[in-house]
Amino acid sequence: MENKPRPYMNPYLAGFFLGMVLLGTIYITGRGLGASGGVKDAMLAGVKNVAPSHWENTAYYQSYDASHEGESPLKSWLFFEVAGVFLGALISGIISNRVSLKLEKGPRITNRSRLIFAAAGGALFGFGSQLGRGCTSGSALSGMAVFSFGGIITMLAIFGGAYMLAYFFRKLWLS
Amino acid sequence: MGPLVPDIISNEFNLIIAFVVGIFFGMALEQAGFSSTRKLVGLFYGYDFTVLKVFFTAGVTAMTGVLLLSHFGMLDMRLIYINPTYLRSALVGGVIMGGGFVIGGFCPGTSVCAAAVGKLDAWSFIGGSIIGIFIFTEAFPLFQDFYMADYMGSVTMFDMLGMSRELFAIILALVAVMAFYFTGLLEDKINGIRTRYPAQKMMKYAIMAVIPFLMVSFISVTPNQKEYYFNRVEKAFADPNYDYDIYEIDHLADELASKSHKMNIIDLRSPEKFEQSKLPTAVNIPLDSMLKKEYQGFLRQTYKFNVFYADDLETAKKGYLMANMIGNSQNFVLINTVDQFIQWFYEPEIPGPDAPKEVRDKFLFRLRIGEELKELEERLKNLQAPVKKEIKRVQGGCA
Image (cartoon, rainbow over all chains, first blue to last red; front, side):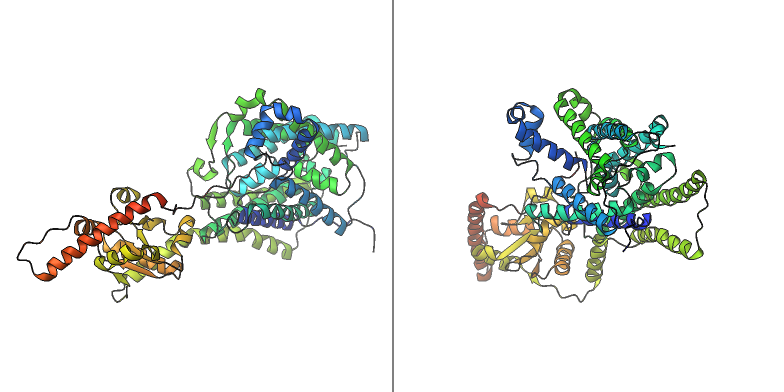
């Protein structure tokens, strides 16, 4: 067997597969997919365990507890789903021989700046996902499947925003 | 009828479902190439439109599927989570996410996939997103008003545009197909190549693209599950030789007084009329609502039989026919009305001294049963089990 990564799936086929996963999820559970919410649950669990007194004294966390009956934030649908995403991607990566430690970046920047920009982009995305009540998965994709006005608006804003700003950050990606 | 949670699948088991669904979700994203940041960002610089193709195909597939399932009565659209709209935060949050996308090169879902296959920059992105979310939750009081502004409810796109769901789905699918075509041209131009599509491949793509249009058109022209059932009811009703199982009021009242626990008395009229007057122990299921999920359990009890009544025989018969079609419970039509019942049992006319014996016997019978039924109603007042099962929209979302 060769050690070359296999090519990616035909995008339309992959999209159909993804659409069926989303449809199945809606049929079984009545809700769509998500991602940022699972990351948030992990963060909330961290705050609750590391700084319990801060958790007790902050209105936001208290209202979270109230709406989740004091359950651990890790016992949430989205956290389990995101854990599944990690495993699923790993399985897919192993099957297609794409697992390796590496760092992808544009040709003009150093590894260090790539890591910094990745973290900065992550922070923006994390913050924006809270404001927009969901990210590309939870708001845009799942919202579109159920015709949600807000979901489709968020989708347009995400991609519109990215296109608007793409010019200013072209050095990060283009040669 | 979907969604299967929480009636058929419990909320605890739902977490296992979440994990399994996540595995498939992760596989789909990774296979699509979403674990590669250069592939993702290609969308914004025009050299790789994979994201658009995958994203739109998935959206149209799922949307068409939702329409189909709902058309066949397999999915209750009233129950699935529809992301609520808070216009201002949706727009501003979206633009901030767009910035995060082009700077960080991932979105949350794809960063988890990329982290799983060993991309170090994805781990950095996840670390950053935890910080971003933490800033939001810590400083929430600052954003609270903005976060809650312009609330519009769980509105849908087709409502906003004032069109049917089907038309909107067709338009979206059209936009998707056109986007696929033109971005393909653009991608070739930017990469300075010419992708050739052999006739066979073109054929395959064309067939695939036509499928959602055919499905949505099929939905628009065929009756949905409710129309289908009501058409069948009308057809059966038009048959003059149809053999109805009937109850006559004296017989019913007699049985009701002695064994009310064996029967469901179902009032097919409007809730307003039901409020005004009803038969003892009756529950209200308007004819038009008989197919709704919350009444299915009640209508299909095997150890009880159903007796349907309304103000007119036609409605009562249609309720009976509908019940026969949706379940295998034993059903009956009451050939009398509520007014007749009240008049005969609660306010019976005292027969004159010369009235024949049958009339006097009937009067005494109705008087006695009327008393018993009043007593029964009094006893049942406090233990009326809720008939209408509380149904709630699924709480979903991702924030």
